[in-house]
Length: 443
Image (tube, rainbow, N blue to C red):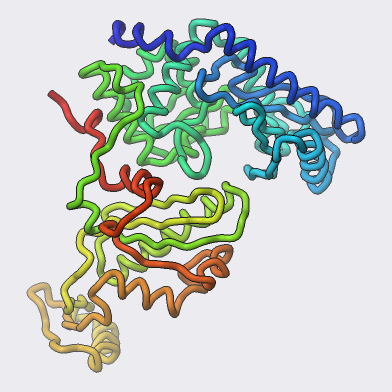
């Protein structure tokens, strides 16, 4: 393992020339924002945050976070409006747009580098008014406790997570954030130790110190807020994937764990993929991702109620105007008839109610070997495409999140995975219908 890590290490550390270029871009952005804050007495100061400030950024991907610190007495309305005014005016030459976390913030790109202009309150440790208030404390603490060697260990871990497609805390990913990566290195000391620890991690194991109980697969405590579980923002699926990645890498170390993976799409799996495509009016990426994830979960529930078995589901958006919901089904067609299990015959009222409600629809009724009343009924729809089409036709207001209903009313398409798909959609469904052989294959 040490040999593989040593070979990769150099590629994850920015060169001196790249550091110089990135600092020049960051300073430009900082000065542009700094020129705007004097107009607003509510603003106290500015400071860099995130991986750039902490020295844990990756060569190919480094956002620059600039935090606008507001007086704690500032109203929430002014907090949001003033920060947007500052961000848009400062970044006006770089096509700024709004992103959303707990509060809106402004994002733009300068020479390929994302610049995030984020508001926070100037508060004392623990007296949080917004979730962003912790960030300056995160930056200050990590700059203090992470050695130069540990910062490079963070870079190794981030690259490992990125290769597994589980890096990033945004709604689209629900993976491990850059800050979580730093906290893990802080706790375990090195990338190698993180791998070894997660390879044998126990369910509900707590990383860090706290007196509070959390009900998540693992618990990762924020060093500057002992009541905050950072793992709550990571999906169970991504936690599981990370554990398997660590086990596989420990068993057979290879540089492929740090590279982009090539998935092979198999036609067999594509045949059972159901896709809903629709266009939406422009909105924040964070908002549309939240909406399509809720829509996917809602429609999966309805398909399951209809008798279909959903193996996996997912979603994708180009964050401009197109969105897709994906469902991998066990089968696109199910039996035309099904048995509905009722109550035991000893439950008189329940038994009578079941018989009364189902007698007009039943094709056969009997008592099974467990003493329960059973009704054999015919399904209205046994093909998934028709079931979904009929459901959406009559249930948009209950089956689709309110924010997407107008988009769906303008039109949508239900297609199969075997249809001719664009390259971006093939990329989006590859994780749904492919096996990552680096973590599920052992020699």
